[in-house]
Length: 214
Image 1 (cartoon, rainbow, N blue to C red):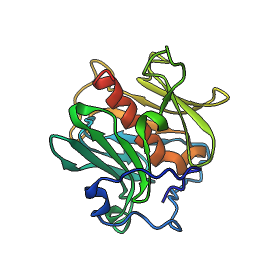
Image 2 (image 1 turned 90 degrees about the vertical axis):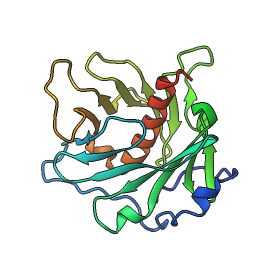
Image 3 (image 1 turned 60 degrees about the horizontal axis):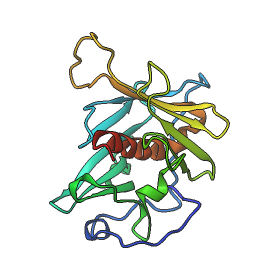
């Protein structure tokens, strides 16, 4: 499980408390690496939808699942699972809960630890764009998502020194349709492999913000 540098207690939705337990704190997310050091993780977004998708590394080092686990008029809940192996797919790494009318809700790191999304992903400037936000990851470092930053990247994540950490790109216009794939891709630099679940969670929140103009 991802260990966050903060332990903020908030009300946890009933469907998270009643859901299968989160991954054990001693079971950290450990992606497979390749002998070709420096090769980024290329996570193919199978559906391209905010309502759920599979994110599969092109080199079979990692597979994450983003699933809707509950939905009603008041809230929608999503879980992120490590489905690289059979065992990991039964215990969520992170959970996102959105409120009524698609409002921002909470991000859960465990059933006992959660944070409001608007406090987890804060605007860089109070008067600035809502699509440029920063967050503190489990390594204690600050990261920033922005849209758009580069022409070939729909979303770009950099660290506090401005170095590229991750980016999400859409299918190139005119590119043929693919079977079982949206053509979209989340790319995370290999040095940040252990942060991939957090990169995915924060990206999905950012995409939600953009989609609903929050």
